[in-house]
Length: 439
Image 1 (tube, rainbow, N blue to C red):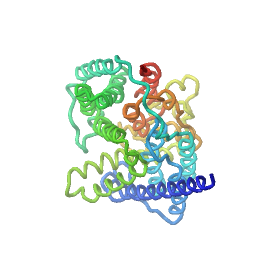
Image 2: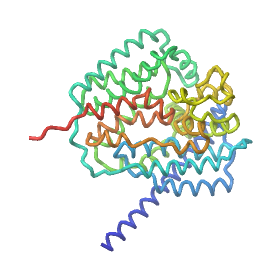
Image 3: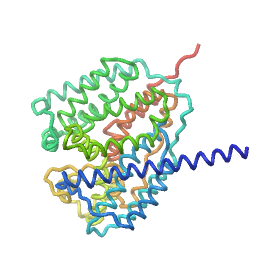
Image 4: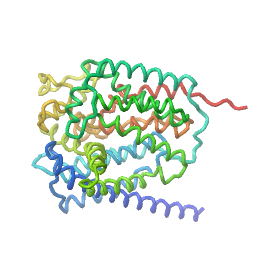
């Protein structure tokens, strides 16, 4: 017993050490993306690199030592998936931006960093990471995949009839112009776009991989490409790629491929290579923008922007969230704002300084910082997906939920639940997956 306890203690220390080490490497890589690419090429969006002094180094050292030690080691459950995605795409980039994008703001960036750490500690502590648990037993109902196919095709037809005349593949310099042209003019168009892109196309693609069905894969990809041609949102371009990597990693059953350490080191090397070869390789320039800046760095940039803006303008106290606005009074400074409750537009126009720029931010910024300042960051998502997904094969379950986890890096938790498939997949996992009959 004593030997087993000692062995466990040593393994735990080693695991924590490697988690901290990989977090430091990834933090340095994201910092280099900010300093040597984003702050150089995209300063127009108030992305800049100030300085990292000795106090910043001390704060970051403590931050990484704690967060790197507690981040889940592997992706094996919905909660571990959400925790690792949050860490890689929100927590680390936010830490980089909070200390490196120092300005004249009176907002206390260190205090924001502290509450970020507390919030992530809660997320990590309630996540489960059990690689040895059986993932067999529940299979999707025979009608589920065909239903997704029918709905995906119907929405694609509707979107083509509505937006076909403005569809185009925007380059890096015309993304926001295309996004404005493809913006929904009513809630029907809005829900058609979001459900087509984030629910049916990605869901059908994940089912196609799991069932080895070429038709599902093709229609899922076609829906993603069509939505990218309409809205120019990165999900249409990269979500199928992420889903494919996760599916293959889970299918291989090699633990290292789904480990948070492996993901951080792999992304770190990819980011560094891309940033310093972008002048020679067009693909590197694309990766530097789409992955390095748009996907990884932007959530941290917006946390910094929202921290500064709402500290100065005043918090919303959740009055901007659809549904809650019926019960909560709008703060007086926002009452006559015609853009309300679109916080992204308010921040994009008033803080970043671009007309019609929608600086839509992740759940930490939009649900937390904007609503209650630092206290709101502690609001975390429940582990409902762990419960409803229990027994569903991991190579199907986790790729289905990956778009939800990724969308949280660029949207409010409530909007993810209502508009981008959260409640839909909770219902499907609860009622459309059945236990396999035993002989």
